[in-house]
Each structure stands twice: as C-alpha cells, then as structure tokens.
Image (cartoon, rainbow, N blue to C red; front, side, top):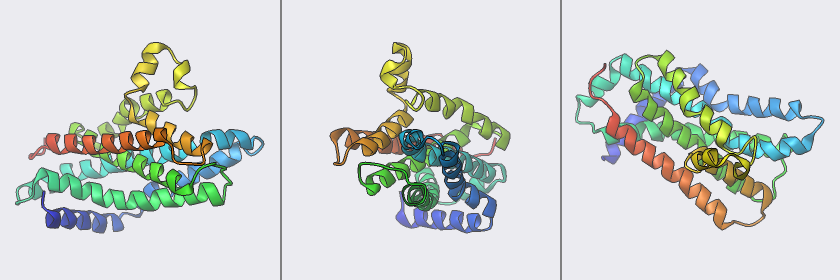
Length: 245
C-alpha cells in the first residue's frame, strides 16, 4: 500500500463529497437529529433516555455511515470511475484505504457533533469519560464505513445497496442488547449476538455509562469493534472487482 496514492484517493473522494451537500448532511446531521428526537420522545422519562441514549449514540453513526458509504462507492463503480482508477497503477488496498480515510474523516466530525450534542445539550448522563464515549462512537462510525465499502462489492445498483441494510444492520440491531440483555436471550440467539460487532459497540457504550474508570471490558469491546473494522476493510479490498459488472 502506497501512502501517497492512498491520500490522493482520499482527497479526491472528499472533493467529490464537497459537491454533494445531501450526503454530507445525511452523514453528519442525521445522527444528531435522531438523538434530538429521541430525547424528546422520552421527555417524560429521562431515565429511559439515559439507559438507551449512549447505545444509540454508537448505533446511529454506524447505520448512516454504512448507508452513505455503500451507495457512494457503488455510484463510483456503476459510473466506471473505479474501473478507470484500477486501470492505473493504483492497488486495491490503496483504493479501499483512501475511501476509508475520507469517510473516516467525516466520521470524526459526525461522532464529535453527536457526542457533544448528547452530553452537553441533551443532558445524557454518563459515569465515565466523554472521551471514552467519543472513541466508541467513532469506532462504530468507522465500522459502518467498512461494512458499507464491503457490501458495495455485491450490489449491482443503489437499490440493491439499500437492500443490504435489512440483511447486515437489522439483525445486529435486534441482537445487540439494546432491547433485551444478551444473556437473557435464547442460547442460540445469544451465541449469534456474541459474534456480531454491534453487540460489543453497545457493551462498550454501556461500560462508559456505568463505570467511572477505564475497564478491561471496555478495552476488549473497543478492540473488537476496531478489529472488525480492519477485517472488513481487508475483505473489501480482497473482493473489489477490477471490472464493472
């Protein structure tokens, strides 16, 4: 992987996104809007917001980054841009890393805004450090970016890319422990949830919610989410096709 080619790819993607304000709004503002709505849905029950707000702070960025990244990458493939780029001396790893770097930069902004809104405007009460909360939110957004890059290789149209959301995101959403503790699920479902990265994202957020200090469980959860993001990016580079289907 070449550093210059990777950064050049990231710069090109960011320049293109600059001319697409709707995508930028979707990535950066939608998680904040969703958290704002959630806060006032539970206006009469602030304890409920505190119990699930931290978890959703990680889930919302993951979902939006997955959706936007998969569609944006697929658009480049169907327009022939990816094929032309890969005809140049540009490796698959350089291309995937460049996309991840560009969308990751937006993920930093998105996670910082959502975390700041939740903590200092919507009064989300957490026991731990705000920086630990921000770290998991950022890792979740990067995981969503990696998943979006990966599934875009298997979609032939933007409609198919959107259809991957029920297949990839919704099962994780149902089994991550947001609605019911994972240890209270049926054994088979608990076993499945134990291999889904969103489960560890929610667990990491809950660790910050409940504990003042950095815990071994938090470190484990953060490393698993980060490791899954790196693994999915590697799979995305391996499955990237040189020719448009």
